[in-house]
Length: 200
Image 1 (cartoon, rainbow, N blue to C red):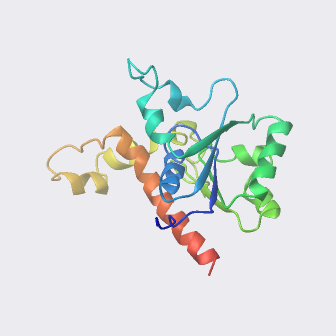
Image 2 (cartoon, one colour):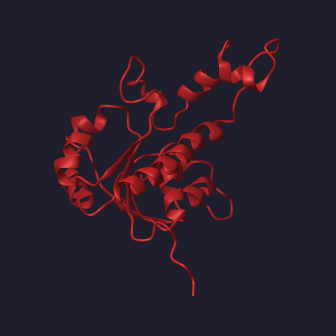
């Protein structure tokens, strides 16, 4: 008899796009969680359009990240889509997002709004420079963490760069996908710990 996976029975809402954030949901699915992927109607997640396999005519990136997920489409910019998301939040354990900070609050879907619907909800928010502060609204640094992590890890004088190479040499660039996956692994770990603490 096969043992149940540790997150069996946990429902995760993945409303993010691209990699930083959504891949955390993928890994939670690897541990047995039910993952509902919310995508934009008509176009789907932007990762679906990344380089495609010539024979399969499908994105290999999406095949990796989209595993373990049940996809639905919702337009979160309109009231009808927002209402459906609130219904899903009522019956979910975790919500993962990586919009530019302040976006969900404008849609009345921020933490203070959703915790009233489901006080047990764990909300995971991935952004390049956090939810507050002078750089938090940098849109390029949120969905894919494209600019935040290279700037932090490779600028001259960066302590992270000097751990990688001697001070006498120029900083090196961390591979792009590594920069996007790193916050996902930490988000997955943090979600595990938060769920364990919540259920004690």
